[in-house]
Figure 1 (cartoon, rainbow, N blue to C red):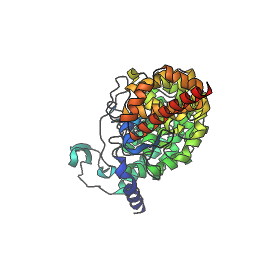
Figure 2: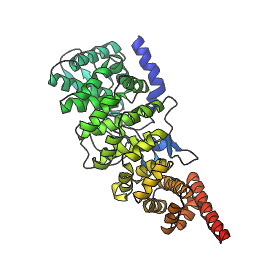
Figure 3: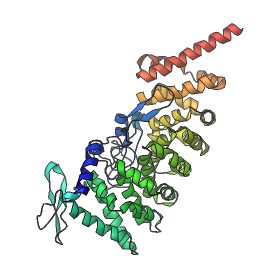
Figure 4: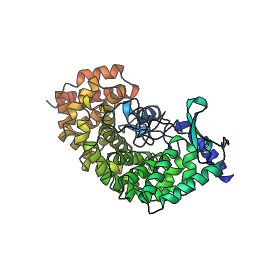
Length: 439
């Protein structure tokens, strides 16, 4: 009864925003964190870029069918879950906002039933179409186990016994099943965590078997879609092992590790812990050398970390600006995400210097002219920071013929974009008048 009560209490606060943040790695790179972020993030009135307003308790925004990591498309960030039907844009297996990346691993396009819909009695299990069009697993005994948390708990405890076994095959099977069970709904995630799976899964992040490691990190990604579990995962000292996977895992494991770090970073206190763990450098490496999906997972994780001032210097020192400017090429399909991170980094001197060195100013001016509404907004904010803090950068911006697109933006952009463009144009005028007076 206590288990059922706990599950229902958690569901009341988080199932509405869950919107299927399930496994991210399976089918195609569908919707991902991008959508959720678009709906849940906002810009502050200063130079700081997108601040994700997940809920007060740090939960992830609502993201359609999360089956993968997170994304910052159109200025928003989404969150995924075990990458199967990626809907959102983070790394895990959440969903990917309609994006289709041919190089991304294929995912299992199966939406699992609730654990409460599974009856464990009897050896044979058959698939049957359930209400609402979702597949449902029922046992041949036809017992309705809906709401029977004790049956669910027994199933999970059996899997947990296999997690602790010495058999690699047993660990592979158990991590795979837990990964899938954690994919579909919040009750399953709560039961799995309450049965003690998190500590064992964290331990398996150091497994020498690549498949066990991949399944374990993906299961943690799916479990992290619960607010309660985010805290439990960090308290299980998972951050350093996640960094280990980010450095040593196979491509999918690295992507889902980045996505898990993104998910955990929705809780403000975790941003400092992740930044201090050494995660920034491997995230930047994934940003530069990963698959398209890996780059998205990395940039969204870096965005969340860049909200915290102390992490901005770490990101700049890891040479992220070079890769971010490269991703501002429209052909990369990640302009909005890259500009969002870059605008946050432009709020510190070290970041502004790196933007200039990486030839980011011409790219920013181009985004002001040709980018999406959110990208223009963030590009204008970054240019304002650059110009008001450096006469040299101000001259470069003017040499790039930025005034016409800024004038257009000041008249037709989003409210924040108009504000930034008007402020920058006003600054140009004051500089010109000041120079005239000195003559």
